[in-house]
Length: 420
Image (cartoon, rainbow, N blue to C red; front, side):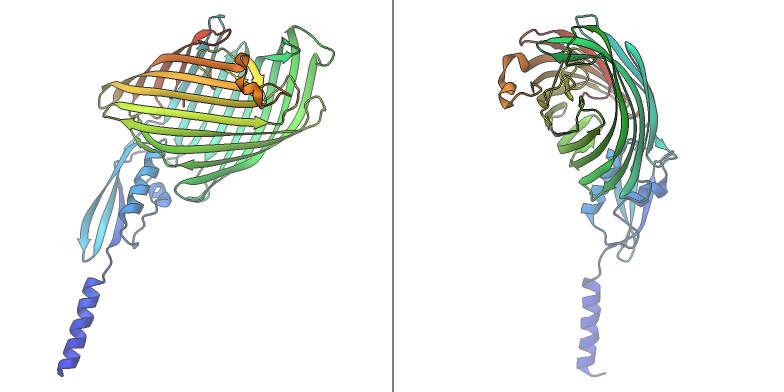
């Protein structure tokens, strides 16, 4: 055989040998019990026959650890044959049928609680379904269904029903009165995940607001009874680059929420409301975690006693009380240092010290209201967490906030899950 032909075949062989790309022979899922292996493969970027890419594998693992049904996940890669490899995703599952409880009090002897039950891995496909009952002077309840991967790895659906009744303060002319407030709502949302980091929720909400006067000051400009039907268009955009290792969180996350509300009554006119939440978490040493949330929001600046942003124990300032004020703008910073006192295989004990600080724009006011002393609340405090590491969101928290600003209160806030 001529030397040139031999050289040519040798060259082709060498090129074929050195240019071969490592590929995934098969993706296998281990350790899962309730979670369906077919579901894990459906939402994963790594597929059989694809190029073996460690970046995609690591993204899949982070994606799995974000799921309510997964306590922890890791991967292994084993050689199969030639340039083909088996990829194993090892799953440590959470228990996902979870009761919830929130209790909050202040030194004014206010007492309210919310009890619920939620399944976060219905049919082994990370469909969340559940509801709650709330007692805050009056009875309230809700049902929620969320299936983020219902149609594909990118497209899902959420449906929510709520019948919420509370005693709400209405502020006007430097005085206030109490109203029995009911909000009955029906909501449908489409859920779309663009990629590993970004997702969108978009939908409609039909609701009825009902105000009934109970006690306090009255004004000819403020009706004693009001019932209004409304439509709400909602959009939520999230960027999520958080990474989880059991109770520890690191990374950045932002969440933007915009709503436009139409009304059938001039007393409660059409308005928009939008706010952004910015989260930053940093692991500090082996046992520490620094956690931060900044919320900034604005709404249509109508001079109305029914302003949308509230100052509340369970939403933004721990220890401040249950809906003590309202505004058309909000600026709140929550920062806390979490330290794990005891870390065992199935549970952990964690302490925290925090500062919750915020200010509000008065209805019809201006941006200077954020700097007014009567609108500023600063509440440092301490807390304690008991965490079950194999049950989703089984974090029992107790916080005590003590106000150091004008007309401050103090109080305990109990709940399930981290405050933020």
